[in-house]
Length: 155
Image (cartoon, rainbow, N blue to C red; front, side):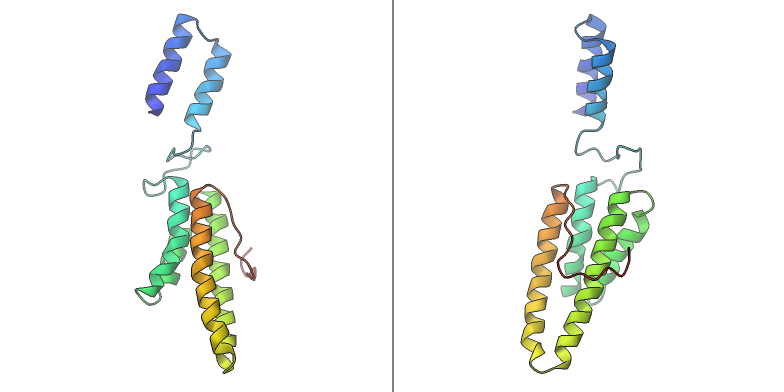
């Protein structure tokens, strides 16, 4: 689709329908269009995924701990560490995810120490799943969403 658009633009320029300046401006828009696996700064692709899809999966991977113990911590951290140098958004979202996980583990542990806190720990668990889903949807839409009640351990 992108290459077809570039070809059409080139033909319009050759016919004189658009100026060189218009061609360059429209070409830039096409190359920066959403869904491009290469970022605007020329970063390499994120395992062949679009940036938004990768960020969404990084958030959703926290739920893998419901199936395989510790996977909900290991998978998002590995996704963050392997691409944080190449992509600023991955670094931003990765720090957010790690801070969120650490914060909510602390909250759950503190609440479980007291007998009255056990029902609250269940509520924390439910909120955890809801917040992960919300952050995943936001990331897929290209938005950054800071998890509520998160302590900033990594800045």
